[in-house]
Image (tube, rainbow over all chains, first blue to last red; front, side, top):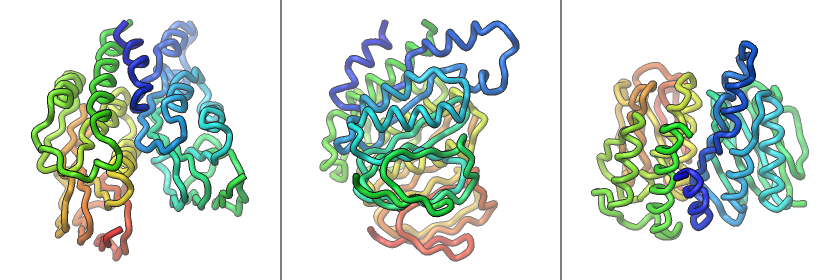
Length: 161
Length: 170
């Protein structure tokens, strides 16, 4: 399987990943008429890592692309959780729906990845500190964060553990 | 396994090969505008999936990464603003977070006077209009059409005056 080989090669450079197709098969064989969410998640999440400064980017990408989740809010929560764990549990993680407005003022950034789940494009940042403001919809399907932070309305201030 | 998946795998391999050649510190050094062998293989694979990039000029090697974004986007073609922003963020980080980035619909009315453009490419992805990706040091860009996120996106160091953006060097 050429796709499997691709995954095996990737660790050297920790670059782009497209999820293993296990999730697709399950979603397609669900039987009943698919819900909108199930249709959106019929393929695996696609992750492209564009910055990886010691954040274990390959593992982060692999972990997220392996998430088989039809519920969008649950996917966002799980993706942030997986990224936090895969990067060693020592950096802050925030994921945001790129179609919404946001102001990113993070510092000591360790990772950035584009994460596509169904038709939704998320940005995933791993950073040591800084601020992030959501100027769009603050629903849990649009953003989530994990780490050490104070939240003031729609602005999150991250700090080191 | 579907043919689509296999092709995606091939694109990933090529992207890794191309990116592996460039250490991050070397990203800003000159790279030939003509794509090296691995990059053109990426281009061929991506083109088979409906992605084409017209490279106008490049002194930084981020084309293979831009292909990745476009290939990821065409699997689902309903979210134009998300695609535009993913091109913007991807190009910004690929270029090392030291350049301004503008993504604009290629046939959108706009004008610009930009200094030291290190990357200029038009990305064609099936299901989306073509978008131009500009990576540069500084200058002025004016959007002369609709200003929605489905038509343009930019980030960097700038002052915005209505539809005109004044970018400063990092």
